[in-house]
Each structure stands twice: as structure tokens, then as C-alpha cells.
Image (cartoon, rainbow, N blue to C red; front, side, top):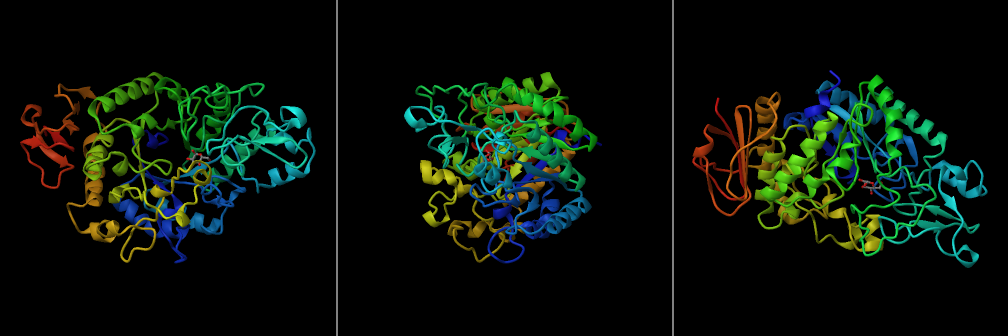
Length: 502
Ligand code: GLC
């Protein structure tokens, strides 16, 4: 069965935040192993692990110094193998993060490039260029780093190197065949260890426009994940790379999911298909407000584009880069988040959960400076650390976990049928029962602010408006509700329900 991912529910583990196995206060791979039964009980099909590779951790491990080893902070390769084995035994597949756009400045390739000369094979693995202006003191072009400041840093001999992210994350030169060969080998390394797939970091970034032309931003804001058209993102050439990966992935029965921040569902669909990657996150869905009209538009365009290329849609509400959706939704965020998960899990395709969302966690927005380690923080004042605080498994909490999480520990929620954790467990079970083989979406008439659709025998109603919605018109009985005490006759504002005619 190679198509397991088509409607899989995949749980993102941010290793530092998920679970601490050795008691040093930071999450690690033994911690993941220990909590696998919890994830099996939650009902997920797979886990995606954010980077656990050797890294100076300038960008939470997205600055990789050795793609084939585990950072001591997280454990060892043996710990990885033990984790993967236990996951397999529990029927959970394992996806790892692949970071091909850039490596760490501590990667031997980059340290060697620094001590080599311009024009050398060592430097050709990166983007070294002379500067502009008198004495070459200006960067080679106007590109800006996603984390703030110019995307170029000057080295001792006066030349500059490109880094779309932090200066400690030099961009790799994908016009160099050696880079291609290396990444095919890295894919193989992890597939040989039994991984079932890859999440491809900055999948839209590896190819830069010929001649590295200026971006000419104008007034356009270049923020963390802007949809601006720029000469270093979403270049057509990236698809040639995936054309070489796909046969290799297929030969191991592995899949890959693209993190691609692009301008439309049409552009996103280019990352998936029979000779591309298997999935691409719908970030439009992730960033949408709790609003029926927005959801409907995004769901329709995402499904239509996915259909054209024969790939499944890939839904997500939160990840390690954006404020958690409980916080994003504003007032009554948790109530809305509980409704949103019932929407997401009812959609055709695959769904990703971000660790801690099953506990209803919100962002820690008032994090003390000492806990802010995001490289973007120093340069832009914006930090992603608020969604990366360690999960509260049990009491006592430890800083920077906020006191309001005391009621949200996994321990506290486990036995409470009304808890968000138990809602997620019920929803994942109901998805298997009612949605596994369900047909596509058939939209139903609904008042403004309400989303209603049918998939076979199951009807899904989401009320994002401000008035209760009578359920009688939809027929059937409520089998799943985001409300603690569901009223069979009506759906209150900020809630969702599944009804079945069976
Ligand atoms: C991706 C990751 C993000 C990281 C960036 C640079 O967007 O999700 O966390 O900072 O790539 O690797």
C-alpha cells in the first residue's frame, strides 16, 4: 500500500518542544519514543519530525551541519532507530524533515568554502559573488533575508555569500551537480533507515533566477512567508529537481510533502503530481480566519487544483512557524479551534496536526526575552518561539509554560470526556469510520456564516456566524460535536458538528 498518505492524519513533532526523555529539560528522541503510545491512542497515522540533525541550533535545527546524524541534544542514531521501530510496531509511520535550500555555516562544506578561493569547487557549492559599488562594499543584489536585513554577508576576502535566511544558513547552489547527488544520497540514507517520507523545507526556494536579478520589491513587504513574486522563490526549475527525486522516493515507497509558500493554489499544485512531490501544504487554509466564506473559497480552489494533478489536498491549521490557531482566531479561540478541527478532519485529503494543538494550547505571546531563540527575533522583533513552548504533559509546569496551561496538561485532559484531547481522539476515530471511503464534497445550502457539506452519509456543519443554526434541515443524528454538551436541534455560534443518516 504505497498511497497511505492520501488521507493520512500526520502529527508534527517539534522535537525540542514535544517530550523530554532524559530529564534535561529539553525534548529529545527518547521522549518521542516514550510518548508514541499516546500518539497511537490519539489515532494518528504518521509523525513528521522537524529537524533533529546535528546543528548549532541557530534556527531550531533548520541549520543542518550533518544531514546523516542526530544532534546530541536529541540523542543518537540508535535512539532514532529505536523510535522508528517502536513507531512501526504501533502502526505509526515516520516522516523526517529535509532541508535542501541551505545548510549550516558549520557544515564542513561551508567551512571549507570559506577557506577556499573564489572560483574554487568548494565555493561553487554556495553562492559567492563580488559586491557592487566602489570596492564591492554593497551586496551583489537587493535581496532581503526572510529573517531581516540583506540576504548577503561579506567574508574576509571581500566577496559575499547568499543566505535567504540567517547568515548562519548559507544557500546551497543547486546549479552544481554535486548538490543534486548529495541530496539523492541523503534521501537514500534515511529511506534505508526505514523512514516513510520527507517534509521538504523551503521546497520553493532551491532554484534562483538566472543572473540573480534584483527583486525590486517596491512597496511590497518581504516578511517571513510573504507571497511576493521574487526571483528566488517558486522558480520553474525547482520542478526539475523533484522530477529526479520522485523515482527514488517511489522505489522505496516513500512520500514527500512540500513546504511551498507560493502565490496561488494553481502554483502550489505544480509541486505535486506523478513526477513531483506527493503533497503540498495548503497554507491558505492554515492562515484563514474562522470564517465560512474564506474557508469555502480556499477549500474549493484547493480541491479543484489538487484534482487537476490527481494529488490529495493537504490541510493544516498550525505549525512551528505561525502563532497557534487558538490564538490566531482571536476571541473564543479555543472554541473556534475545536470547531475548525472538525472541519479539517472532514475534508478530502490528508491533514497535519501540530504538537500540542490536541491539548488546545494557545501561543505564549508574553514570552520573556531569555526564551526567545528565533533568529528572526533579533533582526525583526518577531519571534516564532510562542508556538514552540514545551508541551505540558503533567504538573508542575516549568517556565515558560504559562499558569493558564495547568488545566491543559495531557494528564488533566485524559480522563475528562469534554477535554480538547478527547475531542481530538473522538474526531480521529470518527474520521476513520465516516470519512475513510467517503465521496468528495457536495456543498449544501447554508445561511451566511455557515458552512455545510455532505460526504456520502455524513453531513458537516460549521457555524462561524453569530446566531445558532437549526440542524433539522440537514437530517440525521449528531455523531460528533465540538460543543461540550451538543444540542441535537441546533448548532451554537463557533461550533461544528457531523451528522449521519445511518
Ligand atoms: C522553513 C521552516 C522554518 C525555518 C525556515 C528556514 O520555513 O519551517 O522553521 O526557519 O524554513 O529553514
